[in-house]
Image: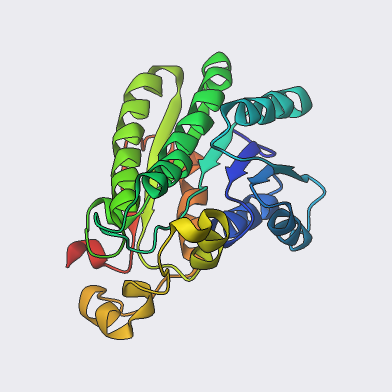
Length: 259
């Protein structure tokens, strides 16, 4: 794939998604920013020095809305070269006793079903063009139980299984599928999750990311990551140099997975 590539990024209104958008925009790619919040999308767009960036208010739990977005991209640009499925919410470390059926369904709907909607909609055009890069954003929570809640851990583990199956299904068409699994990252996910989940979510001001002593104990680098550090890995997976990487889970976590 050569620049300008056509790139869809969900959850692009803040944090990792916004930083990822900056990487692709700086490379001269045509970037389609999707998020449930129009205001956050505009903030991301305002920070990008590129005329090839457009914003699209989309709820990833709505499969038709996602399909319509992909159809619009195809109509406008002709191909979908890269998709970054990044939209997600945090459940405030809710354990089984705190996880109501409503909270479970909402988190699963956004984090897992939303990712399915995105990859389902983009797989067909990628198959038709016989190339593409699918990159999902997971979490160390798929491998470590401590940092997050029941629904969050379950959805992030589900994304890992989805990624491996996508690599198997789509490899013969020249499409790669990989997952980036961050550890603690300095984003606004707590605030945005409270906004999206409302009263369903318990206190989100908890977890390893709020406790320096825990970070010192669990993370060899003894700090949280910057969104830029996650975005750089995502950008690499979309590059020609990553053309033989598929079905992988890449942890960007300061060494947490090794401890």
